[in-house]
Amino acid sequence: MLNFIVRRLVQIPLVMLALSVLIVALTMLLTPAQRAAGYIRSDQQAAQLERIIRDRGLDQPFPVQYGKWLQSTLSGDLGFSKSSGQPVLDTIIERLPNTIELTLLTAIPIILIGVWLGTLSALNKDRFIDQVLRVFAVLGYSLPTFVLGIVLLAVLYGYLGWLPGAGQLEVVNQFAIGDLRRYTGMLGVDALLNGRFDIALDVFRHLIMPALTLFIVSSATILKVMRNNMLEALTSDYVRTARAKGLPERTVNLKHARRNALLSIITLGGFLIIGLLSGSIITETIFAYPGIGQWVVQSALQLDVPSVLGFALLSAIIVVVISTLTDILYGVVDPRVRFD
Image (cartoon, rainbow, N blue to C red):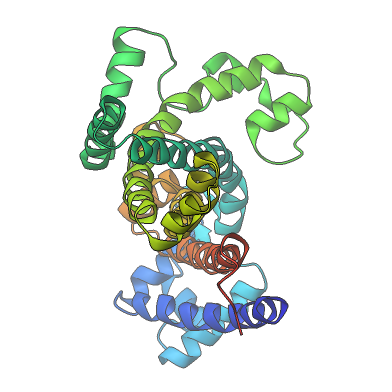
């Protein structure tokens, strides 16, 4: 296991280097002027477009352009984001904690409850509870995220008025967050650490509908996969052998069958976390949640090349790291898996 972890850690920089080459190569489809627009921060700089192109080497061959981009990136200069009005790196640092906060609130319940419901459905195959859960899985799996989000907004906010609408805070609290001491960058957590429970409650109330949207869609997928895996495991030879030895049914179902059914859930959970950390683009846009997803949509609409490049680089890092952790978890869950 240790050798495998070391090998994967060594591979991360190589994979990132290869991905960065691909990312920068895709921007070559744009003209030098379009790419140079991402480095313009004022009207004065706009009048010096040709000089920016020369200084950044945007009219040079690809190896030269890639070298300049890599040098700037390693020094922390990812360019200027027109969509946010500040450097790309500062925008990522500001918005990523919001996305992490939404991920923490949704990923754990999605995986745990999805696994539990899938197990419950399989153990009660063709009974009433199984039929209900299968209907939920089909509806959640097939319901588009933007449709569900709009419905929740219309019902819970527009009609019933139980929850606040889009955004992260009520207007009255937006003026108070400047006095908060920031520890994690996650507004709700920092508000709790500062003893501002009113602000923390406001943040978490705004998170309920985005989290509920992601929960219904994603947990339905995990429920469906877990149910199918569990049904297959329950009919396997090793489960029949365990029953023949006289082991309690609970031990057979949970220790033997469910543990083996979890392998594909690890992969699915990894992809879920990757998607959440990369920004749940549709969900964050619908609820005007100031995370990475909403920012990249605005950047793409404005042809904000440095922002899109920064987002692509961030997503690549997340994919590589989470994929490595997912592979390691295989060995933890299933001792038969070896990394020799």
